[in-house]
Amino acid sequence: MVDADRRGVSADRGQSSYAQGEGAPPLLEQTIGANLAATTVRHPEREALVDCAVGLRWNYTELRTAVRRLAAGLLRTGVRTGDRVGIWAPNRWEWVIVQFATAEIGAVLVNINPAYRAFELEYALEKSGITAVFAAESFKDSDYRAMLDEVAPRCPVLTDVVYLGSDRWAELADRPLDAADEAAVNAAAARLDRNDPINIQYTSGTTGRPKGATLTHRNILNNGFMVGELIDYTEHDRICIPVPFYHCFGMVMGNLAATSRGAAMVIPAPGFDPRATLRAVQDERCTSLYGVPTMFIAELGLADFDTFDLSSLRTGIMAGSTCPAEVMRKVIDRMNMKDVSICYGMTETSPVSTQTRTADTLEQRVGTVGRAGPHVEVKVVDPADGSTLPRGEAGEFCSRGYIVMRGYWEDQAKTSEAIDAEGWMHTGDLAVMDDDGYLSITGRIKDMVIRGGENIYPREIEEFLYTHPDIVDAQVIGVPDEKFGEELMVWIKLRDGADALTADGLREYCRGRLAHFKIPRYVHIVDEFPMTVTGKIRKVQMRTESLELIGKK
Ligand code: AMP
Image (tube, rainbow, N blue to C red; front, side, top):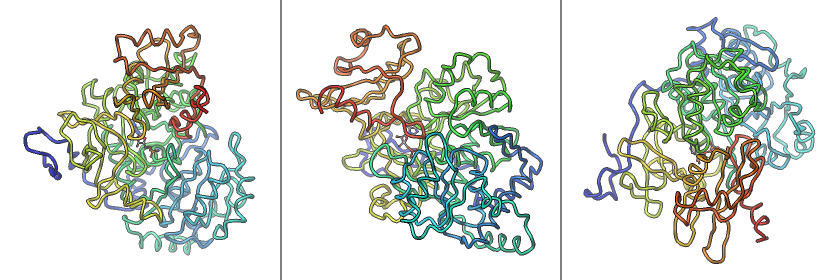
């Protein structure tokens, strides 16, 4: 293994925390449109897209036809390569068509979080200069039309709002291509460069103001392809995608992993619904299932879990936040996902940097986030001086390679803070690399709690608490304390019917098993955690609410 960055590591400190992934298979050096065209030639009849909620079922020929029709419709309305086109909708088949139609002609798709409210919508529209937006009419308690009516008059560059399923949609998406349309789409596609930006995603905002991570064809096509490579995807796979399309987990690790190999994308429901997800796996004979840990926890916790036939499952991906070893074990044993993989990454890195391999030991597969993906370099550095740390020491996780975004949309200052002069993305996550190059995420730099001078990584305590039979989920934060600077607080979700666990009982359970300073001072029992739409727990909100709970506000 070559260490490209040994500066700062003295020879006697052992192997440094630097590693790189495999050099194979080669990266795909083509646009997303060219890749979809090639897949359609290879697998014209294979099922490409299933939307369970509406009973839509298309093979690759049908999918590509729909994509080209909408691409032509966009060109007819004046959308050009490089223009920003927004999408604001939950998971439904049109989302996929908009994704590939914009890519076909090089319009930059801007994913707008379906949970956004008017002021956040306005920020995304304005900041990225969206000229046309595709939107659902409404979803759950979000009235998208009312919010767009309110905001659109204040966004002068926005000239077209297309509601999915409307006449306007039909006008753009349903017209069969004539010769002029064919020529126009082909000409637009021929001018594209795989290094062009193709997608802007506002990062989910567990911290700070959303930033528009700008990704190219090469970034996301290859990430989808490589993620699929490591779990042995072929055209025979059927991927159940309950994670949102608005995030890379859905549109890259789901959609592009599928289309780059001719596998099927199965949409179980517009929003996450554990029962609909298991039903889709069963009815569609899915081979792969995705989710953030809380989704798998919800599925495993269904009272009628055992009635679903999950025997078609082979693999899947758990990612997005800390994947507790206990949950991974259950997914392997009870959901038949023997080849399940953990991925770690972030929107800014397309998203996946590290992944577990199907041949890894059980310990590596349930206890780490794997090692660097193909063509990716990773290192762990001392946040204080940027030097690469020895293996086994915790520091900031950095990654480099084809995965690193172009930058934050029109925000050079924030881009330079995140990506250094040598192209390393600084993730803000804390990690430890072991002797084999496997990484464990120990927390976020901002998550770390410092109690009386002791650095405490909430992750470690959460992992421990998952071993308690009455606890289904535990989230640890730091709250202000006069004596220690910070004190630990844990929010706990109990198993149904396990309401006998008290704060004292919990501390008793920890005593002798955890160092005294890691035993949470405050215990708060909840039914639900505050969540982002991608299923990440909003620790920022937990901290604010906790101030009130402990009487510090
Ligand atoms: P996002 O950009 O919304 O995908 O969020 C990225 C962040 O999610 C990362 O910086 C990590 O903090 C967290 N994350 C993603 N995957 C994992 C994982 N497998 N284990 C722990 N944290 C993760």
